Amino acid sequence: MIRYAANVSIAFKEYPFYERFQRTADLGFRAVEFMSPFAYDVDEVVRAIHSAGVQVVQFNIADGNIGGGERGFASHPQRRQEWRDEMLRGIDLAVKLGARQINSLVGCVIPGMDRELQINYLVDNLQWADQHLSAAKLPLMIEALNLHDNPGYLLQYSREVIDVMDRAESEWVMFQYDVYHMQRVEGDLVRRIREYLLRIGHIQIADNPGRHQPGTGEINYRFVLGALEEAGYDRYVGLEYVPLTTTEASFDWLPRDKRVASTAADLRL
Picture (cartoon, rainbow, N blue to C red):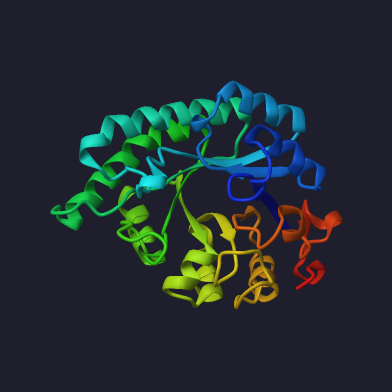
């Protein structure tokens, strides 16, 4: 069966952030993911999560100024210490919340810098993080983002993420495979998932075009999620999509009594 985590940063925008955790629980979910909690009052975030009784699957650290075009800075040489400080802060909060993992965007291409050199800075940071992740027994996700929505992002294809992981040589650094992003740049979804399954620590889904809920676009999610089941994937699938109408209506494809875990046969697709 596939387990689901509702993303309370992309969906639930009808509600104040601190209320979204209880709204998620009220809709039948027991697990959540979200972007950086450090944009909010962290103590309030912790209280809201505990009050709602939801499991934190993951949250982001060190995203930078997303609205201004940044997509993290893990590969930026002049922000190395800033990233490392954010990593330690994120690990501390993850332990406090009992989170399963954290995620860090790697950053955009730095104009004028050799790509290989920038990758080296990223790998160096990941190798530094290994001891801290290991001590906390906390995996770190890195991901590829599609170039259409995220021009200039350093890692755009699944193979590029795997190459960075190979160089970092850390069992605590894992691939966050976002089906929407990968459909936009390379397709071949099920074959890639099967090929990299042992390196994948988290999967996120949205349909294409539009990045809306499954069933609104071209991706055959009954087939994709069925293939995940068949392959024995036992981690969470994050519902990181923009609701086409309301958040509540966007979950109609996933029966209420199946929102903790379900089989592909249960889906209304």
